[in-house]
Image 1 (cartoon, rainbow, N blue to C red):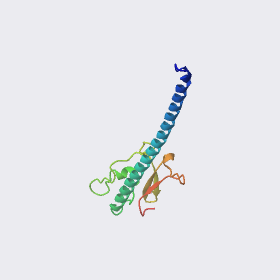
Image 2 (tube, helix red, strand yellow):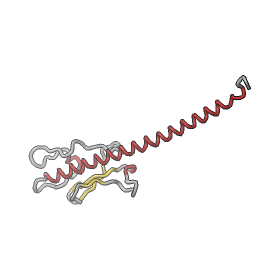
Image 3 (cartoon, one colour):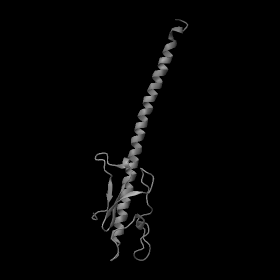
Image 4 (cartoon, helix red, strand yellow):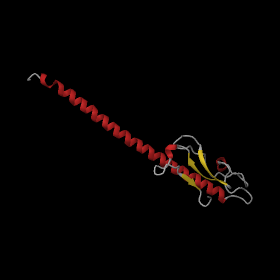
Length: 140
């Protein structure tokens, strides 16, 4: 025992416990990272949705008489040539933070596009499973 031969197994057991603890810590870190990424996507979706709403409301407020009060397609928010010089109600068609594509579900009324929502299933409201809708005020 004085030469240390009786302690050979303890170092291995300690190493196994150390690896297990490191694995648990990494799993916890992965969970935190996942929740943070989900929260950032939700915040970006909220920002983009508000930008679409503001653009639709701007389009509607600057509609000349006799022209459609709402855009007929999202591209109409980029270049509005209904009266005089080109107006830009939206800088660009934003990409959906969940899918990475500039494809949106459209909320359409008889007058035109009233709002948008994400087509990605993971963007659905966790409470009811339905897409979060962004609709311009007073158009639905």
